[in-house]
Each structure stands twice: as C-alpha cells, then as structure tokens.
Amino acid sequence: MEKERKKQYHPPACASLELEFRENQEQIVFRQEYPLNTKPNTIDLLIIKENDVALKSGLGAIFKKYNICEYKSKKDSLNERIYYRTIAYTYLLAAYDRKVQSLDEITVTFIRQSKPVKLLKKFSEWGFEIIDYEPGIFYVRKSGHVDMQIIAIGILDKKYRWITKLTDKVELDDMKDMLSEIEKLQDERDYLNAETVFDMMTKLNGNKKWIKEMYSMGAFKDLFKEDFEKKDREIAELSEQLQSKDEQLQSKDEQLQSKDEQLQSKDEQLQSKDEQLQNEKNENTELRKEIAQLKKQLTEQVNKIAML
Image (cartoon, rainbow, N blue to C red; front, side, top):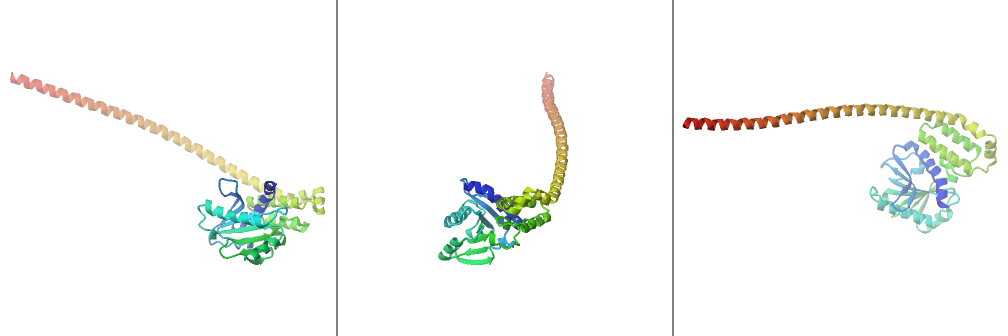
C-alpha cells in the first residue's frame, strides 16, 4: 500500500518542488527515490545544492548542501516512527555517500497536507525549538541535531503556486491560476513537471462539483487546448531540431569513419612498403656478407699463388 502511494503521490510532489526551485535550477540537483545503499532504503527526494547559493524560494531557506525531503500524502501519518526512520536516513547518507563530509551538511524536510500538531508537541517536549518561519513552514532545531523543517501545504502562502495545488482544497480560481503559470513556462522539463502536478491536482479534487461539470462538458480540453497545443508544437519543433542535429552528427560520424578507413588503408600501404624496404635491407645485408666472403677467399687464393 505504501509503495502504491509513493508511485501515485511522490512524482507530483517532486515535480512541484522542482517548479518551486526552478529559478535556481542551475545550482541544485534533484534525485528522486535516492538509494542509500544496496538494500531497498530510498529517500523520497534528495536535493543537492551548490555551496554558498541562496535559493530564491522560501521553501529552501533552511537548505544546506544535502537536503532530504520526505513527502506524506493525506492518508499517510507523520509521527515519531517516520521521524526516527528519516533521521536514520541522514546517518545512512553520511555513511554510504563519500561526498558527504559531515551531518552538518544535511537538512531534513517533511512535507504533508496539514500541520502535524502531535509531532510538533513531541518535539517541544524533547527540547527542540519550533520556529514559525512562514505560514506553513516550521523550523525544528536543537543543538547537535540535524536541522529540520515541516512544510504544511494546506496553510502555505499562495505565492508557492505549485506545491499548494497538491491538496483536495483546490477551487476553480486556483486551477485558472495554474493555467496562467503554465503559460509562462518555457523550459520543456518545467512544462512536463507542471503536467504532472496538474494531473495530481485533478485527481485529488475529482469529487468537486465544478471539476465534474468541467469534465462532463469537455471544458478542461477547451480551457487548456490552446496552451497544450502551443507546448506540443514547441516540443515537436525541439524534437525536429534534435533529429536534425542527430542526422548531422550521424553524417559527420560517417564522414569520419570514411576518413578513418582511408587513413587505415594508407597505414596498411605504408606498412607494406616498410616491410618491403626491410626485406630489401635484409637482402642487401646478406649480399654484402657474401661479397665480403668472396673477397676474403680471393685474397687467400692470391696469397697462395704469390708464395708459389
């Protein structure tokens, strides 16, 4: 059951975070289902940030170099056991990834629909400091412990236009707001991530009256038709350009291969000539030896005749 929820909820959650951090996409790396070792222990999402880079999204204000993100759907619990398991992941990451120098380079982010009141109360009892960084973002800190934050999607500020759509509280205006954001996207990966988030948003809100009516009227198709067709054309153009470049590269490869064959043929000819020259040298050496031997024999004969 948990694996099925991961398959369903984790890709759109990761896609929404990529979109939230797209202004820093050159300085950070996203690794979904990051394996910790050869056994089936995986992190939902590991975000690797360049050192000394300040992220523009407030969701990453706490981030250091290695940032573990654990997403919990509405049906999943966020309790002490999840906390223990995720903290264990930080130690496994430090143990198995040689690039990690210390635990001070790691942060943990828990993402869920609502504020985990019971867990935050437990953290307070354990001596953690709870800081309300922004509506829906809670820092959890204690000396000697990995820095953590909890993101409650349901009470996040609407400036986070993507991750806030992963709830069952979305209304028609929110959906139109998403369309407006999709129209601004230029990068193909951003567009594909937006489609993933949109698909999950419609699934989570499928029981809403307005969404059922729009589906029954085919309104979604009409509403998104122009934008999707535009993006499809752009993707098709990019595909054609890539295909053209591939063909050009293939042609160059064939030319290079032809030149290589010509060079190989010349090398073989030169090698054959070298062998001929070597054979001639060997023959000349043998002839010199024979001539020297004949000269020696002739000299001995002349000496014998002179003695007579």
